[in-house]
Length: 505
Image 1 (cartoon, rainbow, N blue to C red):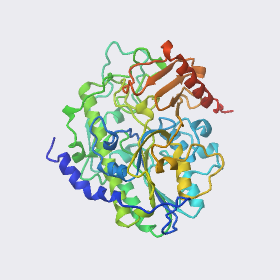
Image 2: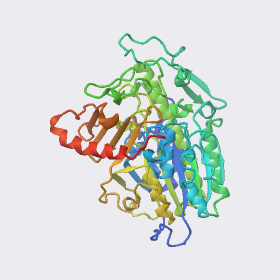
Image 3: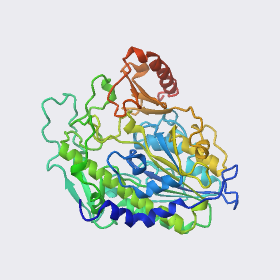
Image 4: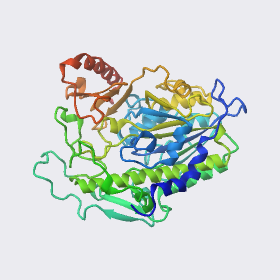
């Protein structure tokens, strides 16, 4: 560790995070502050590729995230929130339209939801239609695919490529001089050797200064400018961080928060994607999509990448903290709903996987969700109910007192914002598609079980995981006769969910 200790770092950011616990007035029946009658603002914060590796979520790697931790203490933190698709565009399209991927028909990163559904009303568009200023800074919809009907103004890179990753003034740390080194002889023969993104996947970017040349730094700056510009009128301001999307990038001081020698690899770490015994082959893609593409990962390299991923999370937290701090400085917190969510999860070497793509495991689909609604009775508490990112649309509509567009699905989380332990019996669903057309797998998450079926009618196998007894997801119970009734019940749910999807044409 360098001279910047965690204690010193937390002290440096204390001023950024401390204001997040400002008391708020009670909301009336429409979700509007009863004391003022003003329509509530929305500050919508997102991050990319961020699994639940935050301090407030009990990060197994000890992630340092003081600003999001403080936001969680001010609002309601949802312990078990799940995305609908472990890939950027399908996940964001579902969240921002309030429809599941089986209805959006966005099953890859190249399809714009508007090309399929030109008349749908996206979440920010709804607010704009009802007199809000809606502006975007950074990545909210997927890179290169925005919703022109959603914003009065939008700025900043929306993608995760080179322009938003390193920026001016940074330098790269190559984990290996030549990507795609020799593989062990026992690597599966089917492992693809496409190295088109290998150089990209091998980079760790150390940014100079505070990362002023990085896209996320500028996205935070623009969001701060928006807050100042529109503070006197109802606003929906969206600020999206690209980090910790690969290549992991942060200023050196964020790397210094983590001792690489103390990082413990997952118990199911493997040098390449590996299907555990007893699991269907379809449960793990044979190649990684983000890191260690087309090559193995040594334990030393794995620790370096995990450290860089954590540094990227801390950097995203710092930038988001700058935005939240400005919201408080302007005195807007009492009348602003603050939401933080990530688009999907990530595997950091679990089962040899270094990406989100194709993962219907917990780490691939479980994502942080924090909602600080002024006056909500549950603020400062944790909800352990099973919820979905799909639910955010309905929740914000109810809090703002707006009419709900026809066809929006999900459930409003307002009951859980007022009572985080309220009775709740809604499962969460996630799907995966390999070819952009047909469903490869469907997963359902209940309070006790994670179940997934692969292929039509489960012909490519299933997995049943007891999350309480087996948090590392090492034992597949799907073929155990004593769980046959459980599998039948959950299989019926996944097949009913999949039946909503109609193949193109």
